[in-house]
Amino acid sequence: AQSVSQHNHHVILSEAASLELGCNYSYGGTVNLFWYVQYPGQHLQLLLKYFSGDPLVKGIKGFEAEFIKSKFSFNLRKPSVQWSDTAEYFCAVNGGTSYGKLTFGQGTILTVHP
Amino acid sequence: SQTIHQWPATLVQPVGSPLSLECTVEGTSNPNLYWYRQAAGRGLQLLFYSVGIGQISSEVPQNLSASRPQDRQFILSSKKLLLSDSGFYLCAWSIRRGIQYFGAGTRLSVL
Image 1 (tube, each protein chain N blue to C red):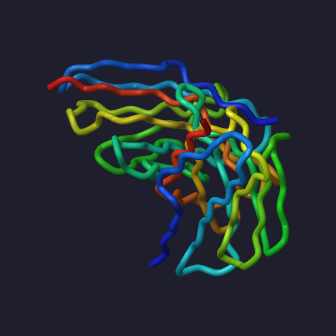
Image 2: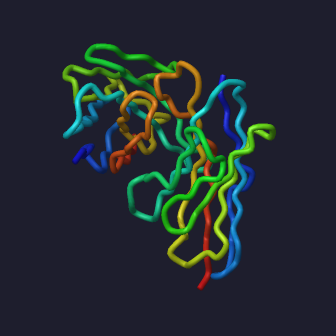
């Protein structure tokens, strides 16, 4: 069975600080990887995805993530956060013949202070 | 463009009452459909998914059921709600193993 682990439950940063949110998954086969974000009062929406190719993927709002297959990791990064990045971030994976089912991590709440 | 509608947004129900949450998708055909429950600090848990009309797969044993009477309609139901059914329920759709798109969710409180 697939599982996803996010390392931090709550991260607090000041504006302009750099961000890295950890995500590790367990699945031995080919995977699709996602980061979703939920801003306060809004829908869950896609931040970025990895299907194949370049393991460094770029998403919206200056976010990027790097897929390291040997470490089963897909960490999310942003060099300089803004107050508007305050949200909950979810890492998710689907793999194999899983009919597109996503397994989500526990989520990381990011609070950015102005 | 594709849209997903989920209602109601908020629901307060007594223990033992029935439940029906509806989700519809517009602008696509034969999507995969999903019901998730989101709990604070626990991420999203997949409850049901469907790859076609009348085809429902359950991920976890529970007091809930799902149905897909039409291609773009997905319904989450219960005959008798329990306190433990309280939570935030999200519907989503995708094309095969692609990106999933989520609805606004339903906040269910069982009292």
